[in-house]
Amino acid sequence: MNARATKAADGAGRRPGRPEDERLPVGATFGYGFQHVLTMYGGIIAPPLIVGSAAGLTPAEIGTLVAASLFMGGLATILQTVGIPFFGSQLPLVQGVSFAGVSTMVAIVNGGGGIPGVLGAVLVASAIGLLITPFFAQIIRFFPPVVTGVVITTIGLTLMPVAANWAMGGSADAPDYGSVSNIGLAALTFAIVILLSKIGSGTVSRLSILIAIVVGTLIALALGKADFSGVGDGPVAAFPSFLGFGAPTFEIAAIISMLIVILVTLTETTADIIAVGEIVGTKVDRKRIANGLRADMASSVVSPFFGSFTQSAFAQNVGLVAITGVKSRFVVAAGGAILVVLGLLPVLGRVVAAVPTPVLGGAGVVLFGSVAASGIRTLAKVDYSRPMNLIIVAASISFGMIPIAKPDFYDQFPTWFGIIFHSGISSAAVMAILLNLLFNHLKFGTPPDPSVFAAGAEHGAGAVDDDDLEDLEDDGVINGSTRRPVAGATAPDTTATAPTDTAPTDGRASDGEHAGGRSVDGTPEPGRDESADPRHHAAAPLPRTATP
Image 1: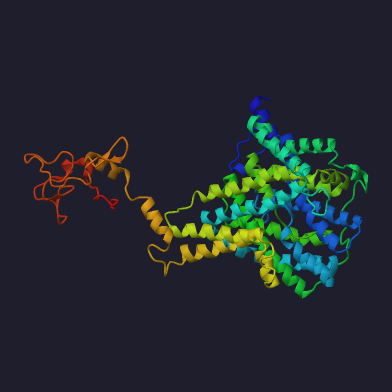
Image 2: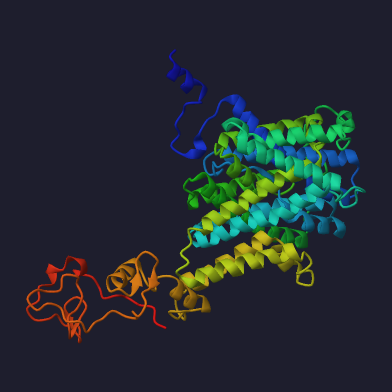
């Protein structure tokens, strides 16, 4: 077997038709996949920990919830990335329990529904969500760069408080929360990521997040800030039990509340699919969005039977794709397989859970910031010569930042309203979509210069172009080397008389003429051959000149 055949056999030399179809060697595939697991592990176990604690479950029962969330998150990730007919976007998206429903699930628990009530609400609401996914797939045309850029940028910005909380220690109840040692450990991890990205080889640079987390954990262990004593507690292997928390129960109010969460989840997943498509550089159409949303909802329908909750794409892993440049969906599928194993082997999950949160926070600053940077790159494609696009960007990002800057801003609003707009991502997405419809799709009522931004754009761009400047230089109005006005010259001398035996060779008008051989009323001068002056042939008069 020759070298080319060998490369083809192990998949390393395959040239895919789509960037996300690239196949890496097995070792690299699982290495990068494990990096995805580390990135989202804290996020995927947080909802079951919060809901389980609110329900008063024992540590063993909470462990069952966590294992079920890892197991179902892995299966959902594999379905989303590998895909089957009608299910799965085949994009590098990691799935896990959605944070959007945490407050609603806690409210259901506190209302007396318990875990069975939560699971029943998730089951019915997700089934309804599965039925309405074709509608959401139709909104792709309402996501131009001005909308997707806003949403992607907001995703990154809204995740920064998560990174900051991790860097401070993760739990506000901890005695060392916000201590210099915690933030210093996060800063050290951050510095390792930056250093490896700068001086490392291609492979080292791509694995900078994983290496930084490992090194940061070892340093934390040496400083006594990492505790692996609980790794041996509990069973080594355990399969999530079917209906382990009893049969789901169904309450109308709980189902309606969870249905609102599902709508938010569908909106966020749509944004994540479009975002990762932008980062990967691949086509995302209505069919692909529909397949991705079906995978989301199908996983959410199955999850309650194993003791887990609503599944959704994780925005932080979109940032990992951006910063590593590893676009292969099979890498993320490998991460899904690792999640399944972690769900079956709780002992491995406890090892990963022992990674100090400040270490995750240091890496998260880079990861989540890269999401925002990807959004800014998308916003660079927006046509800002249309002033209303500037208003869309400004208003939508500001609207998305309100619940981040003031989390209790919507506390006095109805519950359904708060569920939607407590999410900065949903707030920005709703505002961007509505304003884009208003300004760019509904044309009636929009004046030519619809805002104060138009005046600035008009003066700042296009008032005098390069051709105008050349003409002014030829006329001696400005100095060509410095672009400064020439002393005593204020305007082209239109009264100078050109030689009468030939047409002016510089294209300037003689006495009584307008530039280009036209008279004052704009008609061509009789007998003049306009084609003799190639410089101004078929050229319009100077568009606009800056006047005092």
